[in-house]
Image (cartoon, rainbow, N blue to C red; front, side):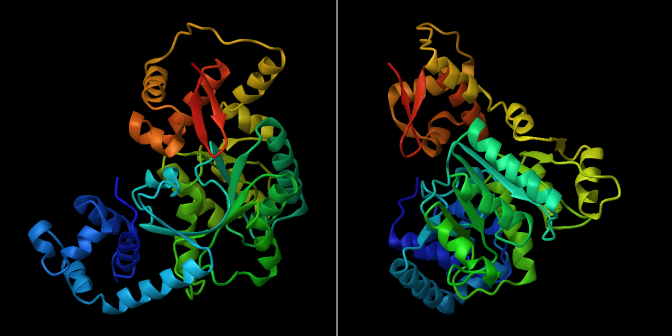
Length: 378
């Protein structure tokens, strides 16, 4: 693992300022040399270590003075305003996002949420959310909190479905994170500033953009991949035939994440996208939080709580699957690990680990502790 020094943070921030280089390309470059610092150390002889380096990369690395100054100013601002600079190998960086080929090399976070919570979802849809859509979100978030507490809810802080999802999460005691299409020195739209302030105490704000970045249209599309990539599942509530929610669903499918949609009336403008997605098998149909929790197999948590209340003890010699044995062995070697650490020690994906940890918790073998740590009960 790369040591997260201030130099590494600055190097990663500088790389994100290189023109004409997209996230997937930066990430490949990062992986090939092992750190952002190593990339900049070879900025004058990059073809010695990467023979197929493009001329855009060579030119970009030769002219990084302005990027260096910008990164230094940004880091100073972030430190003054308690903004966390999450580089790719920072344990606080969303581990689900790390599984995506176009993950940002750097994320900026303001808030108190654990971005690697055991369960994460996003709720997306139209900016012109109807009363029907608001009622769906209200009942879904309320019931989800009862069925499966402590689910982290992502959305984009936009009008309509996004802000409704954030507000209902706050009301029901769920952490919620808004993914922004601009820097953390401002809030867009301004009407959601008060909600955003509440979210800092019960969730947070996340972005790949430095401060003073304007909310350009292209940024919103790029923002959607972070909403999708940080989540176990995407839930589309209302959408017209075209819209940002459908883009997020498409990105989620490309990341092999689950996609769900609430159906609406035939002929309803803002249900057209949902109905078509369901019809074309682009999303599973759900009508309630119960449907969703069951489809994700998160209802084991409900069974577990009932079992614990009944005083059911775990089987001392349970039959474990090969993946369960791998996980138990990892915790036997080093107990009390976080989810992001377990992905490295077991080589299992976050979504797979989430399911396994529930199964083992149900069997009374593992229990979650504060701070997203999992403890093997010996």
